Amino acid sequence: MNDTTVENGLEFKLSKSERRLLAVFTPSSDKLEMLTADMVKRRLEKQGLAELYIGEMAMSDLLARYNASNAEAFEVELGERRDASCEIFISEDKLRARMTLTPCFGGDPLTLSDIQKAVKDKEITWGIISTQALEALLAKGHCKDVTIAEGLRPVDGIDAQFKSMTPDPHDRKPKIDENGMADYRELGDIPVVYKDAVVMQRIPPVEGKKGCNVFGEVILPKVGENIPFSKDMTGVYVNPDDENQLLSSVTGQPVAVPNGMTVSPILSLKKVDFSTGNVRFDGAVTIKGDVTEGMNVYALEDVVIEGSVINASVKSMGSLNIKGGVTGNSELFANADINVKNGAQGSQDETEEEKAKNTAKIVARGTVVIGFVENFHIEAGTDIVVSKYAMNSTLIAGNKIFAGAKNGSKRPSILGGLTCALMQIKAVIVGSDAAIKTHLQVGLNPYIQKQVTAMKNDLLAKQSEQKDIKKILTFFDEHPEKSNEQTMAKLHRTMSKLSIDIDLCKQELHELMDSFSVIDNARVVVDRAVFVDTEVQIGNTRWKCYENRGKSLFTLSRAGSSEVTVS
Image 1 (cartoon, rainbow, N blue to C red):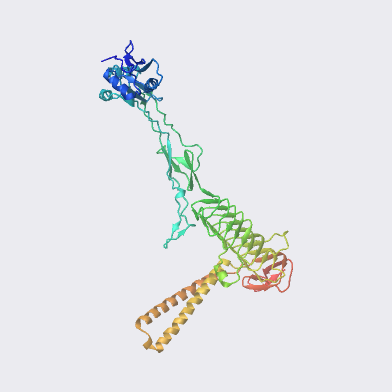
Image 2 (cartoon, rainbow, N blue to C red; image 1 turned 90 degrees about the horizontal axis):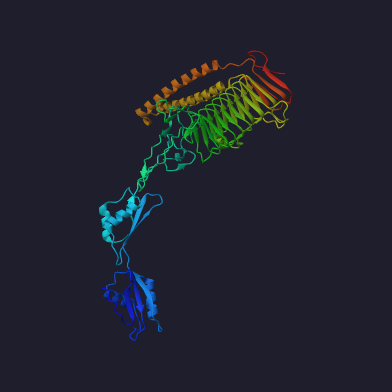
């Protein structure tokens, strides 16, 4: 119904096109003092115009102008007749279409055909929701940004992957002892791979899957790259039975490189301290810095230390080369040669307890070459070469010992301690004006001599124990009431075992002494000076210096002689 009656000077009517709603005011005597929006809405309902779209701004304008005290005649476009609308928006990647439905306001409603035509106009052909779903949205009358079509995203391919098959070095953790205490020096073995072990697995690339946008256009995926193993690899080879597998060609330390792996028979470390833990490696080891206090290094092959060894232990089944020095109670061992460029300096023991704790020792089955030696014990299977001096130290060599440079300083080459070699000792200066006791010995195998001394001490200990048991047995014989069968049986068993052990020890000692002969041409050569309190021993014959002398050669006067000849 469209009743255009004028009330209170206000009339509501449609435009000629019947699309626009007009509010016309003509001043009249029955004008309301205050017109409200509710009053306007009731008038529109009464006239059958309530379904039209009413603009908020237009309503405010109408009320303001009507309620003005000096209101004059005016006409306001209050609203309009609107048809229902359908808007479809396509995402930038063309993989999604969204729809917004706006309801009608006195206009024409939408039909399913209208929506399907809008979809068709947008050329959407892929991933459209079902007709039932569209009808449900249509029945609701309105919606905003509802997805009505969705494409299929492509699945990108995956590049070839490289998976390390070696232990992770970061998995090393402190060892926990039985008391729950952590040993931060003992972090476990450094990862090692053995020859022909699998060190890396290459996972071939994975093909991607094609996608499709809402327009039905195919979207190609990113292709997985077929990345080959790196060409910059050493110590590995491709498994002939599996082209995607790397095997180690050597035993050593695995190090991952981009798209591959290297295996080095040499373990390279910046230093050895708490950050690395103790080092055990089935190959060669190179250390750029120091081996710090309390740390241990063990290698099945050569060890090179560019720094120093500080109160630590290094054991090499090959050679050992130290470019710095060795200090404190350090222990070095090599199955071949040992070279210490600077020298070795141990602590100067003042008490017997300190001497017992002192483990400062260098032992090589080959040659030891060292700059200087102070308060250290050095043993070599062949030669010992001390380029500067040895002071208050023990030097034992299976062949020869050389100490000091002939054109060097006036400092003693050997001062104090024991210097013992099988064939020859050659030094520049021996002893000093301070008359420090210095012992030089040649002619006897020092290692056999050590065995003889140890066996003699063992024999004396067994004989002493045997003597003590004899005293106990004698006492029990005289006082049988103070013994019992069990005690006597035990004592007799111990006595019997000691007798057998003593006989065997004497026999072994006798055999060892038979092979313990003096080397006829053994000698001690001193190039410049021999000082008082120097003692020279060749075989079992000793010579002591009671006054300072110059250049000297010490030999036995003839084979089997008990006299040392000095010339």
